[in-house]
Length: 152
Image 1 (cartoon, rainbow, N blue to C red):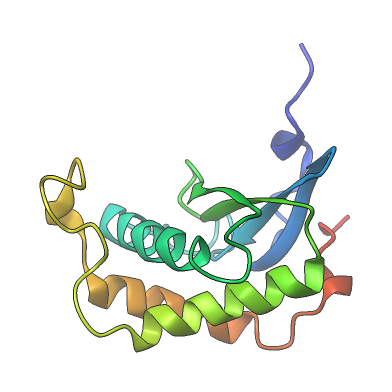
Image 2: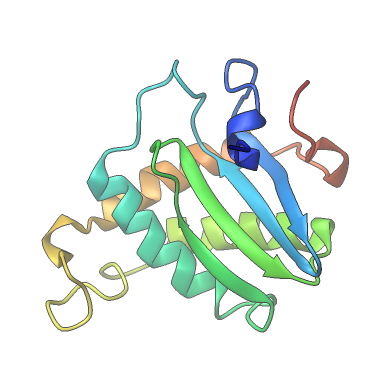
């Protein structure tokens, strides 16, 4: 059986950042790696869940709203996947940074924090989303489109 693409990446060399995971036609899958695999502490469920709600809402309401197909967490708890149609890498980096700043600046509760809107709304924490976004934004400070390749 063939390995899926993500299992062919050397996770020992992988550091936090943004990577192009794969390109399928006009859809680019971005690996938004917030943690160093197998080294850093994993994101807890509250953090993953809260960032997912906030990031997904902001990115789908920003400059990429017509192009975003999906945003969600990795099962390994070390980052997120962002799928974008007709991606311009520089714009994606710019928008990821902008969304992280919007989360940091957000005044109010996590989007969708109610039993009607979410299947486990009690785990949502705006503080957890802000802390994670602040850490990740600092990691992305000097990132450019040339840095989107996985390490070899």
